[in-house]
Image 1 (cartoon, one colour):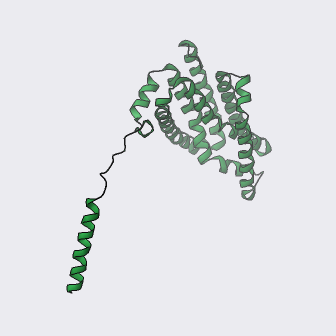
Image 2: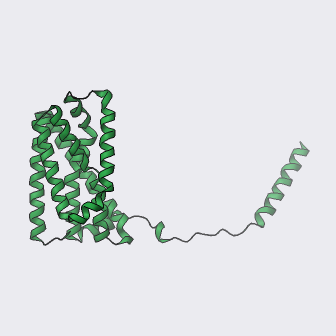
Image 3: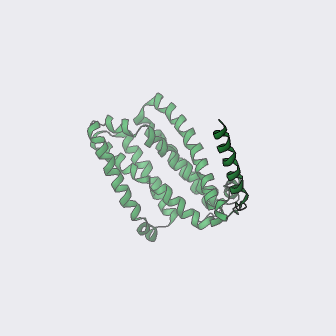
Length: 233
């Protein structure tokens, strides 16, 4: 027992000596990259710019439905076409992803030929037309429609990056993009609920027709606002 007590005392003494000779703690100074992202600062930045308000509204309404579609009804709709079975569904999705990646890599070519306004208009027309195709047709035609429709996904991040570099300074870019994505998530959630109710009442195919009409109307209003307030993208 005395041996154990003596060993403990010796250990305490050695530990005390070691602590005594330790260096003083150094507090790391905060760097620019360590700043906390402030959500309100990002929202304030968006509200202070007509261009950012317009862009946020477009991204939210245009891709809000897409997020609901891609996470909820894309697979049931594809299988309902009776063209491919569940065994080939993964292959179909892989082909869609491959084409999406190819299109993303060619975005610089599109930017050289078209302005952001032209790209937005073309994307909206593609979304409206492909939703109408999916609403009215089944079989191979419906499959082609959804294949084209799913190609718009990469353009969300591409457009966000393009607009952010033009309208948002680097010091607050991450914060503002986070705020834009928050608004997008809120709109997507509301859209998901409303479209879910719509599908329960009219079915998947008819819901595409209703949504295409709504997207076309929304784009028309946004373009009018863009012209009214001389918003240049």
